[in-house]
Image (cartoon, one colour):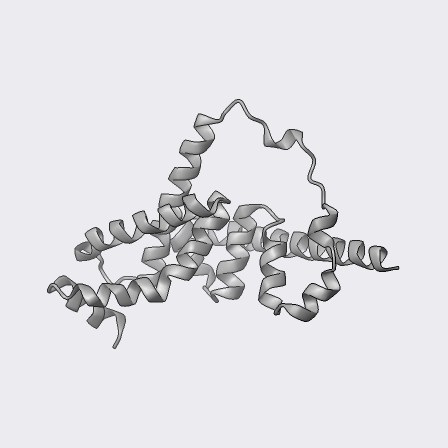
Length: 189
């Protein structure tokens, strides 16, 4: 069943079809929210709020874009608002005062991790070490396989800004991965 048919059924009162959207989009929605908020509980709450907002706004959905793009934009906006509220309530705290350190716990047994876990887990770990906006764009582009235009619709960033941030994100991702692996090799030798 295609998305338009699902939406039409939901609008006629078949709420079971909405649970199909929840099942299909909840993981990526959580990833977007988590990249912005960097807090599991806040991300889960933002995703729930986003599903409620999407359900209420569904009658206004115009089919001008994919449902996923429209919904991820809601998740992005909801998460960004939550982050802004949190930031304004803790405006006196300067997180940049503490330099980023890679602890031994984070790098212990990186080779064992590579053997035990699949590549997605390694990617997730490295994505947590780069700025959330770059991690979000890399996730959307490479893992979700969203186009530049879809990312533009989700984030509101210009296509050229997206390309620049993707370039910087790839470079930073590579440097963090290299640093983690270098640190692990030194601990083995």
